[in-house]
Length: 178
Image: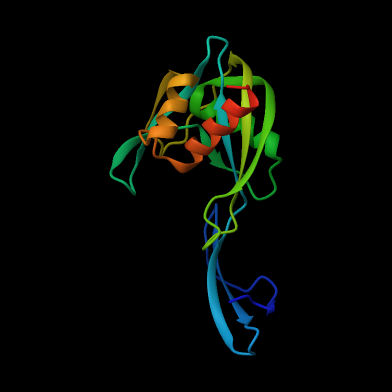
């Protein structure tokens, strides 16, 4: 059912460093009122670090919510007022140890529009040069370079299961004409 109006922003029930839980009171077309909770998020960047040899710098990262390490693209949450490109370079340097000479935009996606306003902005990172930043203390990451052609096959056949990584690999392949 479509909503006809909503209270501006809603009440914040919980606020952390990287997201907030809000509740809005919505008026339905029939005049009834409902409350709807959502996660307010500053956005995130997803990087496809593409090397001259055709490999993508993937990560094997432990995800506590899953209880296992998964294969994924470098990504990270943007600061509330942080510029998108500054966030992209920072996350790339923290998670891979490389800086990109070029960050080509690959578009945006909503991560989970049913319960969050988070936008993920994708970039193809090329011209990689070593320039590490210290990793976040709570991240357990191992670099795993893989050929883009292999990753494309993995995205298509289900071996790659991380949604942002699938989207990033498909968009990078299309951008590169693969």
